[in-house]
Length: 602
Image 1 (cartoon, rainbow, N blue to C red):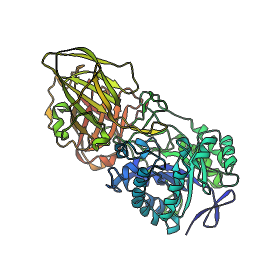
Image 2: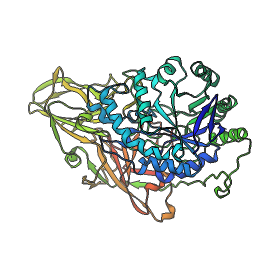
Image 3: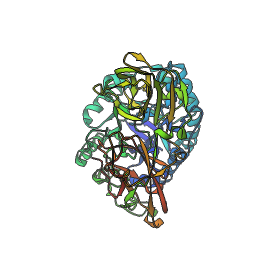
Image 4: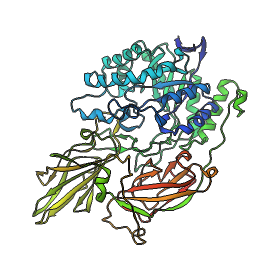
């Protein structure tokens, strides 16, 4: 039974000192078929531990409806890591941040207006308890105290950046202990006074998160924890991107230099990230440090990390492997795993499948009833009140006429709304863009108003964590509130009800400014199963929307970048015909897509 303990300033595992050399891989951002490949590469780089968060919203997408299969099979991921000789650090706290939708919290928490997040609110804690009653017994057999690979668990994540409810942290700690979590428990926070004061739990290891400034960060930790082992639980070796920004990169030499500083100090480290992966579907989060500065995260979570989004070693991989080889006292070489050495798997390889014509289309506005059962409400309720988590939501109402031109005011849109009058696009209202306005007059015969709202990702960090989606207050034409709404919830998880029509030659080549949202469908043919490789979907000429391959939601695209391609792992493809569906909000200059063999992240 290899149990991790603390003895003075050292970690002790199975009676021997250990320096934890860990890298983060999130199982929920990587298709399961590639878990082993990524873990083997982690080990080949010289790491002895893998770390992962556990996102509550993935495992309990609806109250008391649990999912632990496929990409959500956390148990299999941990068992696999253990079978490869890796230790595992698990961070199963209710909140994870991780640039993940709502920081891992399930959206249905927001259906209760009175519930308070991440504190000793009885309603919130009741939901946490129910979730832990399901999750933690799954982890129990995988703890090192039970013969498994898990050596440590996190109590809460960067809590000092959010609040100071010590009783809440103690409640989480006690709940873990009572459910048999008898391995090392820890917290992680930024290296500042207020974060360490509020985020730590007395009697348990505190760790710090940073990307540089090693000496200063560890000195601050020492002010609060004089003797225990030093550990950087999140070494930010790269960074994430928001839509409309430049792609973040960091030189490999700089990352290696900071790692060497930590190793010289005798510290343990967890690379955030070793392999970033992808925010598939609608799981990207968003940032909002100031109320009017909403910044959604892109689909790629490449993070400029040691492995690329498609799992290939980068310059950072080789730079870090060289540093780790020197500090472990032996030169790391790629040898067969059968000899007990370090095996670097062969590259998976990529393919450029070329151009695919999108020969069919289907109007969203004309087929709302095929995708959702309409609901009638007096007010335009937000998604969470209607049991919806992600995707889009449509609000329709009738305005009598005649009426003079007045501004349409949406209080408040979250996050981006296309406004139509009698099916014609009037403009776009976007959160954080107060200069965008829409006004219209209503003819004598009246007009139908339709507002299509996109949830672009719930806030995952900071003071505005409570982030309901859709129309959260009301809609006015001038000063008059509009009532009596027909609502279609459009999570976009099942598109099988759509009826597609063949695009004419004119339709496939012409785009108009009044283009309504359409689904486009085409087929990628792969001749032989041996030809199936990773590829990247390029959407030149398209504007904004969502892409699907064989029913799998690859995530969002947006021509404002920086990301210009979507990663398509080979396991999503098959021999023969592969269905490609693009949901485009604004029309395309060319109804075709390209499959290329190289990513373009900006």
